[in-house]
Amino acid sequence: MKEITVIGAGLAGSEAALQLAKRGIKVKLFEMRPEKTTGAHKTGKFAEFVCSNSLGSYDITNASGLLKEEMKILGGELIKIAFENQVPAGSALAIDREGFSQRVTEIIKTNPLIEVVNEEVTSIPDTPAIIASGPLTSESLAQTIREFTGVEHLHFFDAIAPIIERDSIDFDKAFYASRYDKGEASYINCPMNEEEYKKFYDILINAPRIELKEFEKDAKFFESCLPVEVLASRGVDTLRFGPMKPVGLVDKRTGVENYAVVQLRQDNSAKTLYNIVGFQTNLKWGSQKELIHSIPGLENANIVRYGVMHRNTFINSPRVLTPYLNTHNRKDLFFAGQLTGTEGYTESIATGMLAGINAAKLILGEELIALPEETILGALVHYISDGQHENFQPINSNWGILPPVELPKKERKNKKMKAELMAKRSIEILNTMKF
Image 1 (tube, rainbow, N blue to C red):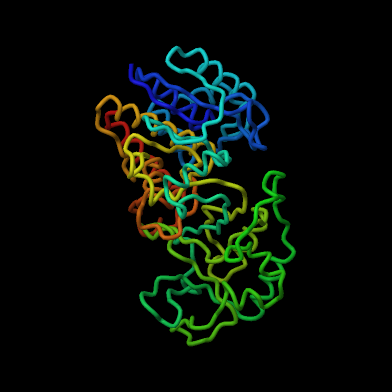
Image 2 (tube, one colour):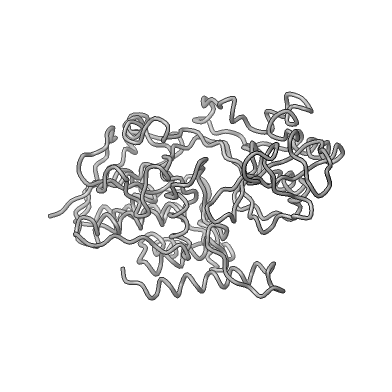
């Protein structure tokens, strides 16, 4: 009987194992807990929710909600168990985390095609495998992954700047330019006068920060990616001589030399998302929103990803993975979950599902599937495997990664209509596909 190894029994690994088993593939599922802990997990059960017990909205006019609907269509296993263990939370899919984890563990351990091995894996198997060891991958396995992917393609600490949807930027204030007009005018620039800068600085200096967990406190930040609030604490003008330097950035409409400038860099090939340059931060999300909305041109910005600074092992997926979630260097080696640079519980389950489906297809000699970019999962996988990325950072599901839909001119700013059309398009596409 054909067999595949799955490393990690978290959300992604558990989903992948169940997808393989229901296709008749024997699975050897490795999980180092409870023999070896991560510092974040509390039990040795599978698919444990570490932080929140919410998978986010299940309304299909929400990007996360549409992803859940896509998983249902594709035959996701954990999403069914999640709904079976749902607790009241409005339109959010919150679960009884103990009941959910217990049920996943029972289903896996009683499946005759899945063999559970409670020990740490320290090297990449030379047989077909899915690595879903998560953001707290053990040091030994991480070192092996580093050797396989290349030193520069494995990261151990997230230093992520907020990401903004381009269509929500006010271009009556913002302008395109590159410093000193060198090359293409590829940056979006939000200029500030002295009064605006001091208001911004005051919000930044006084904003509350997220406390690092115990297992993260020994992590060291590189000087080149310090949190913006740490830079600001060095002096009121530090940012004006760093990431907010105004020199060489003049709005040709006004000719004014600004006091400070916030730059945004293109984040995806569709040019729908832009990240704020140099704004990696550990501020609480409410404070980040207040701070970003104080920037001229970003008063109504749609923030699709908040900045974070935390321990998170992830590979440089655009250089390592194909749209099937297997590697360029080894077609029988797949990655899934947060290790790929997808953020969020729902996203972890979804990539585990796709990796499981494609690993089974590979072993069975069938054609692998790359989902269309018009679907949330297809767009998410395209984003993390897009070789055009120069500064890859993890991301979760959001409307900004999908190809745009045509809206009547008077409805261009109607977010609900836009979401409804995107959801309808995705569901229609998936319902016509064969898996």
